[in-house]
Structures are given as C-alpha cells and as structure tokens.
Length: 430
Image (tube, rainbow, N blue to C red):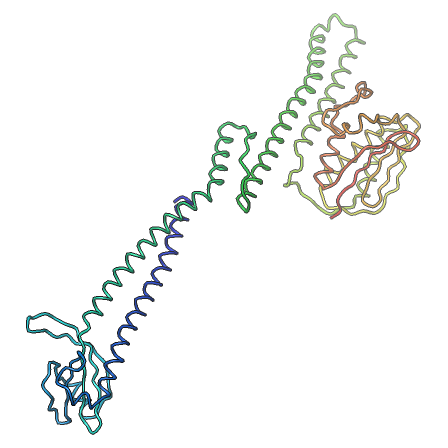
C-alpha cells in the first residue's frame, strides 16, 4: 500500500469517526428533545385533574383514561393492563411508555403514554400519537447517514489531493534517486521549494548528491592520478627487464646497476601502493579507536627517524598528551612529517619536534616551501617543481591531511623564522 493511499485512508477514517460520533450525538440529542417535549406536556395534562375529569376521552389532542382503585375505568381507546392497575392501587409511581395501537382501518400507530396516580386513589394515563416523531427521527437518520457518507467522501478526496500535493517533493526525490541509480550520474538536483520538513529533505538530498558527486569525482581523479603515478615505475621496470633479457651483452657492472634500479623501483612501487591504500582508507568509521599517549607515539617515531636519517639531529619537546583515535594511522602521519623534514634537511642540521597543547610541530632548516606551493603540498600526487628530482610519490603529506581530518584536526605548512619550513598538525582531543 502506497504512502499516498495510507494518508488518504487515515484522513477518511478520522473524518468517519468524527462524523459518526457527531451524527450519533445529534440523533440522541434530538431523540431526547422530542420525547422530553411530549413527556412534559403529557405530565402537565396528567397533573390537572379538573381538566381530566371535565373533558371527554380526548384532551387537547391527547387520549385520556381514568382508572379507579377497584379497576373500573372510563371508556377510551387506551388499553388497561396490569402495570396501569398497579399504579391505580398505589403500588407503583408514575411512568412513561410507548404502546402500539391499531385504528379502525387496521393502521398501526405509536402512542406515548404517561401513567400517573391520582390523589385519593386511582390512576390517570394520557396518551398521544407520536407517529410524527418516528417519522422525523427516521428522516434525521437518513440525513445524518447521507451527511456522514458525503463527509467521508469529501475527506477521502481532500486527503488524496492534500497527500498528492504534500508528497510531490517525495515523488521528485524518488524519481531522482531512480534516475541516479539507473544512470550512475549524481549531478541531478531536485527543486527546493516551500518550507518545512519536505523542503529540508530536498535540501539534505541535494547536499547528499553534491557530496556523492564530489566523492565520485575525487575517486575518478584518484584512480587517474594513481594510474599515472604507477605507470612511470612500471614502465621503467619493464624497460630494465627488457634490457636484462640481453644480459649476455652486459658487463657485470651494468647488470648490477640494472638490479639496483629494479630494487629501487620496487621499493617506490611498494611505497606508492602503501600510500594509495592509506588514502583509500580515508575516514573509515570502522577503524578501531583507542585512548593512547600521543607523546610516547611521537617519541617512538622520532627514534625511527634518528636511525633512518643518521646525519641529522632530532630535538624533541613533548608534552604528555592523551588522544582517542587510531594510533596506527597517526603513527604513519607523524612518520610522514618527519620523513618530509629529513628529506629536505641538509646533513648536520637539526629537526625540531614539539608537542604542546595538542599540536605537533615539525620544523626543519631546509630550503622551505615556496608560498605558491604551500596550499598544494597536501594535495594528492602534488610535487613542487623543486621536489621532482627527489624520490617520492607525492602522497606523504596528503596522507597526513587525511589522517588529521579523520581525527577532526588540521595540518598546515608555514615558513619557519630564519628559514626552513614548519608543519603544524593539530588534533581534536575531544
């Protein structure tokens, strides 16, 4: 059952319940009012013994019969039965009732009667033909049924129209989602008209489409860039392998150079693939996050850097810091920062590593980063003109930014006072 049909049925059921309750209430109120009016008039007639005894068997259009305590009664059309005699002998109080009588033509009529005791004994009961009440109530029932059916029909129609208009944005969203699923193109947008929840839904849907389109475009660029970067070492390796096939023409030194080149290119391939895998992980919510001492992690990475870059001095000032996150990914990010600093530092210089107030700063004394390159050094595969002669894939600092953003942080590159560069990694401690 569609949502539109469910809304229509709900509207019809609610209106049906309200109309039925109002109709039943109206009917019983009118029933009570009509009978109350007749009962009051009959009671007034029964309480006026002078008028009762003075007139014939009909009084003001009502039929009157008197019953003595002995059971004798005045001639009339009203039947005398046991309940009337019980009132006449004083064993029961007054009461109202409906009786059905036939006229001389055999037609049935409904009479409303009051049977009341008289002073000094006996009883009087007065009856009135109330066929008109039955007729009026029957007409009222018919009118209320027709009104109820009309109200339910109008409510169903109004519910269908309202649900159609209300759910129009939802239908547009559905059609857009179906087209996107069919074509794979998330560039489509839905109109953001009106206000309220449905307008917010359209806005959220367009925001989601925008994010999806950006993610797909990023993925396409990533695949294209990765393919380009992988092609270079693969081509070089293929060339060296082709040359090695003719190794009988090569002297041992040439063969060794080729093997060294293959080993270097294999390492570059390994590093490149590792970097691609790290970037592909992105801000994966499934990564395990734990509490750990970030200063101790930085200290262990610095020890590795000292072993790797033996010609440099690594100076540390690490404030005790506890973080919640992926220690494995943060270790990779810190290593990339130190590796970048070590790669650009002259032998005999120093790299200063500082951790205070949740911010890690890595400062080198190299040539620094040109102002026009600072906003791009964290882009994937970006390599400044001065860095193209250096080994690397251009993924190291991009991985640092991915890890920082996955932990709610930021990373920036600045010019260090006196020369060199300082990279600042700030993480969210919350």
